[in-house]
Length: 80
Image 1 (cartoon, one colour):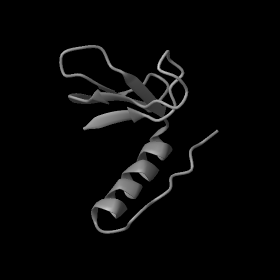
Image 2: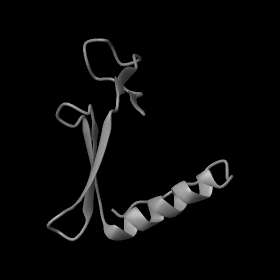
Image 3: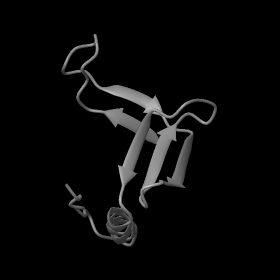
């Protein structure tokens, strides 16, 4: 798995891509009733954390299942 940051604000310039290998994905319940998904190296701190409600997680799961079973693309509209 790989994280591609398509818009960089670093010294590389605004048109450069930043790529990091993902060795671990951790999903955990949040105290507010939602969940957090952290992606990063297997032996270090996470590079990105995605916080979402349970409803968003269910919609994301459905979208991933649809793509895995043959759809070309799915869009998940997130809660504001």
